[in-house]
Image 1 (cartoon, rainbow, N blue to C red):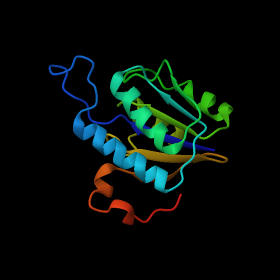
Image 2: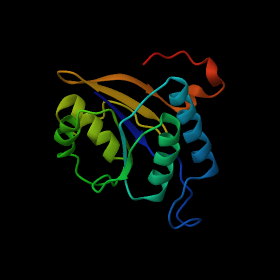
Image 3: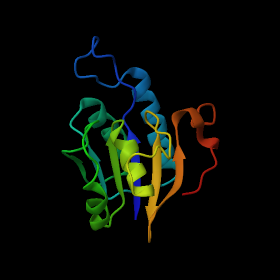
Image 4: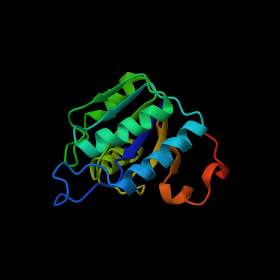
Length: 161
């Protein structure tokens, strides 16, 4: 079972857009990552996202590229929401899942899964970046990719998932 953790793409400042929609740069970088996932034939069973517009937009971009059969808004994925109940729910699902959320939620969830505590910053989370974790007997990082990593590489990026 694989879990893909994604921080939403860069958003417009609140003074420009009260809903903080994706900025043109945020949309472009999310599409670049989504195309990379498509090229690598990543398949998902579900995509969960928060209700915030920037997460909804990022989730839609990702889901289109990975042919996710089910995308759903989930409560409890906002920036300051507690992460404690998610490991059990994710493991019980037994499906490949992508969660599109926010900092610090995404970072705390990754920390909790990898170390048993949400307080360790074990991995850096970036806008539009993807952290792929795999669960067998425990959670492990398989790979991570950021828009910055792909800049200038196009489809030449070497990557096995």
